[in-house]
Image: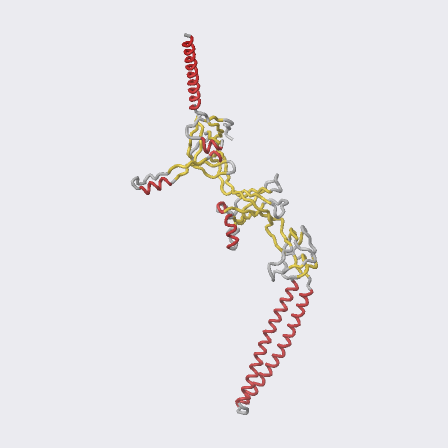
Amino acid sequence: MARKKRRFKRWIILIILALMLGGGYHRWKQEKSKERPITVQTEKVARRDIVESVVATGRIQPVTRVVINPEVAGEIVELPVKEGQKVTAGDLLVKIREDDYRANRNLSEASYQGSLSNLKRSKASRDQAKDDFDRKEGLYTSKLISEAEYSAAKSAWEMADASYESAQHAVSQAKASLERADEDLKKTRIVAPIDGTVVQLRSEKGERVVGTSLMAGTEMMTVAQLDQMEARVEVGEVDVVLIEIGQKVRLEADAFRDDAFTGVVSEIANASNNASMSNAAASVSSQQATKFEVKIRVNEKAGFRPGMSVTAYIETRAVENVLAVPSQSVTTRALQGKDANADDENPEQKEREKKEKKVDELVFLVEGDRAKRQSVESGIRDDYYIEIKSGLEEGQDVVTGSYRAIHTDLADGKLVDVQGSDKATP
């Protein structure tokens, strides 16, 4: 009897445990099947002015800048300027030792004078030979001299005439040498070509420099006009086609963080920076992005110095009072494309359709507690907002975050929990 009671109790306990486990599993299954909302943030669709910009970085440089290179080689004996000094056109910048060039000039002068004397002798000899030939020609006509004597006189005159012509060429050559010697002597004095400031000085007094007639020459200094500055920035090949002469530019200089500057596009390079490279150099830089130099004239006169870094925001396009949403709100989803006119019986056509993909540009709206997928057509964008050409109306709530929700989690009809939303039109 006692054994039956114990067995009965065990069955009761097992049944109770089974019921408890079954109830827990049922509650777990219900909890699991319950839809969890996706946390999102929203903002209202509003009208804004949008300015699209191309961002580029570069350096500040003077508009007018002259690098001073000597045309003749030698030792610097005078260097009356220093870096940062203002100069006027015609001021002496450098004087190179002129001893050798003056000696060469004197030698060329002596050679020129000698050629003039030789020309006079040649002219006298030619005139004498001409007179002798004319006299003997008359005698030969009167049959008073032989043909041999006549021929000898003619040859003597022709030789004297040729000698005179050679002397003339020698004079011209000597004169050219003298003029070149004079010019080289003048080039030992280098004067300022423009009014400006010595922004960079690379040479010292007593240093020997190489002239540009021999090779590239020594860069001794740079003179620039600092009253007109420009930003020289590098723009990628995708963006350079959007840039035009005269476009407005907003400039930010690292050296003047609290100041804002403006400018205008003044010049756009026709060739990329590496277009003139050799084949070897071009192959090395082939993995780098192709850049084009764009020059921007700075409107303000500030304390810029050549070489200062600058960031340029070039305004390429602008629209006013258009519907706009935050840029992060717009995403894309790939869809299988299908040609409405395709032949279903053509296997090649069907295979091609499977491979074709169309990209749907869209945003997610919030209607009640559900997300609604909405296809849109976008336009230009600035740093924060993007123009919406079609698909939305002013005042609608569009999802602005999170990134994962917009690009991965959200789908049409998904339950959402709106948090931290900006319900007021900004």
